[in-house]
Image 1 (cartoon, helix red, strand yellow):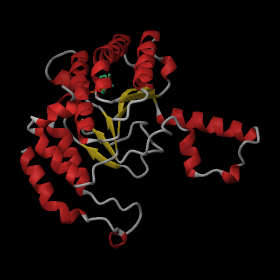
Image 2: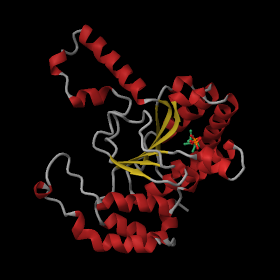
Image 3: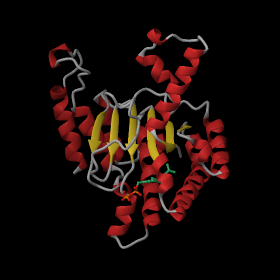
Length: 278
Ligand code: FPP
């Protein structure tokens, strides 16, 4: 059964329909999945158990985003700074990633998910690189959710790399400094194939971007929740999305200039969603 067929009989159907009917769902959700270690420590368990549980939340976020018709989901799975963690934890995370891709690829493909990566992926173990390459190639033509895994990723690393290429293009005479635009800078970043994130979610209550999509986050709405990533399942994503659709995104304008339906006018629907989530 595909994820959309499953939805027909699920209790989530009503909530998802209400959220879709607002016409204000984000096109691109990006998530900083934080707190796996603390989730485990609070339970007297090993940090790696937290990552295992975090994996289930990944499955849930991917499926729900796909069912809702969200076009892009970007997950911060491993930062360039995460290489500094103890080797056994790094090894475990790499193994988890490989297992996820091997086990889930058929289901992801059957549901039209297109897999991509951003980050310094040539630093990943060769076996992980091989599985990733297979998954990316196999799903390249899919037209459903684009799932981007940020792996060995750092936004400053990507910006620096882009600036170096821009400088080389200027030296070769392909480009002149005065012609540079914001769009051109975006086109040099690894994220060039995706729209900027509309919503960035961070779990575990830390209020920072931690070197994630710094250029791309210029106008993103930020949603910070205190819960740890392994607890971010089902209703938690609906809560974040309800909060998002209730916000008014002005992009520097004032309220009166916005032609779209105001957040207030769809309040009653949203109140019904929040009530259903209780
Ligand atoms: C942050 O928690 C989480 C990570 C560094 C890894 C996230 C990885 C997964 C959820 C599983 C693998 C993902 C994919 C997409 C295959 P933390 O360890 O920093 O928690 P802490 O801040 O409580 O220590």
